[in-house]
Length: 149
Picture 1 (cartoon, rainbow, N blue to C red):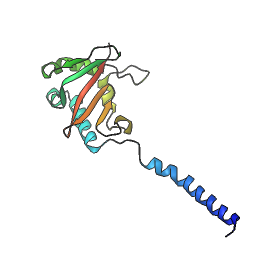
Picture 2 (cartoon, rainbow, N blue to C red):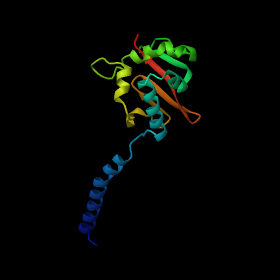
Picture 3 (cartoon, rainbow, N blue to C red):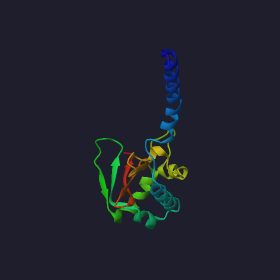
Picture 4 (cartoon, rainbow, N blue to C red):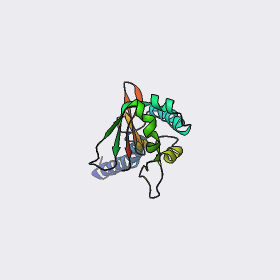
């Protein structure tokens, strides 16, 4: 084997790697939402759309942490008895994800399925708008919300 033929084989090998590597990297996203997260979100979303406060309450981890959008805002802890009182405020807040103001209630209407970017890389937390959901003890719960100040 001559140096020229060896160089040709190496170049072909490098070309094959260069072509196939990007496809392999794209095939597996950096993070994915587990099926359990999507199932929970579908159920949670339906409860919001149907204004089913008792179903929603069962999907919240109490005390629910509610924070303002500013870093220096003091978090509030909402207990189960106070959830129905704060729910309208949670639904009315702007998630802050678009130039046009909207509300979490309207935003939720448009989020039928979780996007890959909704979930963290460990698959134990997802976020929809300004609301945070966490998997604890094999159960998904609504744990945190951000509201406008």
